[in-house]
Image 1 (tube, rainbow, N blue to C red):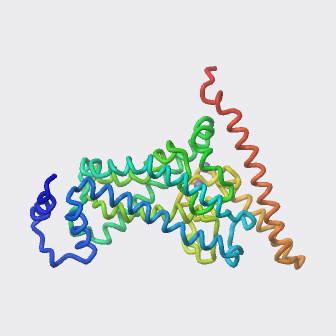
Image 2 (spheres, rainbow, N blue to C red):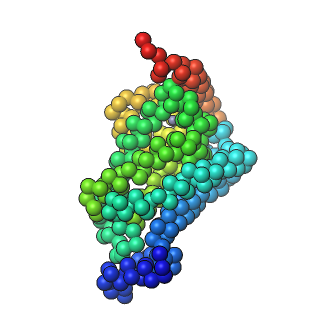
Image 3 (cartoon, protein in one colour):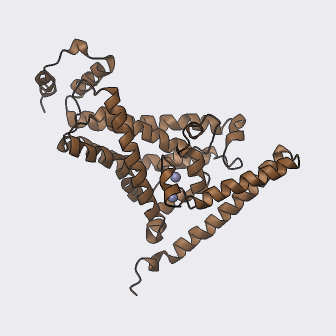
Length: 332
Ligand SMILES: [Zn+2]
Ligand SMILES: [Zn+2]
């Protein structure tokens, strides 16, 4: 592409550039500077993903290193060490470079194929973006529930999803610690929603997709953070899953397969063990409070119940792996 083509694209839009917002002007400047829409979109997508993902992990690393916050840690005795976090970061970076970078590079051609706006300005009105992002959240959550439930079965678990379950007490950085096949399978839930929507409506801007992916990355990192604060989103939106929901999934190996919302697990009964556990912890604490037990006793009671749930999960996981090879291939 020669140096005049991007400028020509903008001339063809016939816009009054003085009416653009600051963000829209930066958008135009980026595309003109790179002067190749495929490279401009690909590079921006990759940088956005890296900056948002690792940027969102930094506050959680600080929180892990600050003992004050341990009172809100869901598994208080399982604080990740720096060595564990570094090992996880190395693997996530390797996966980003080898799997996500090539996949993200295909984003502009695929976006154009489905009629998604990329270099164009102005951006859509915020009301439309909010509506579209709400739809993507709904679609991804349902897709994830289905795909994640399948990934817990037989060979899919043993050879793919087991990698992500390396950490029974998750931390922010391990949100994308997964087998390459899982990155593609579960990543599809994030990207298929916008592509499907664009295919049907021909009315979607890549800026909206970036906002959606930013929120989705926040959701994923936060769900793995291992902390449940009094100000966490699930305290204000009761159907929001949050860390408390997904932390149990890692600890107990089963239940809670959805990402953002609680309704599918509730509707399909895949949160029964989780709800029983929550009820048992609540009852044990209430009984101890009646006896005026100390805060330490309450924590120990909760810890014992957590260890029971974890031990059951270890057994279940071993059973899935042990029976994996013949469960899917037996012919009788
Ligand atoms: Zn899982
Ligand atoms: Zn997870």
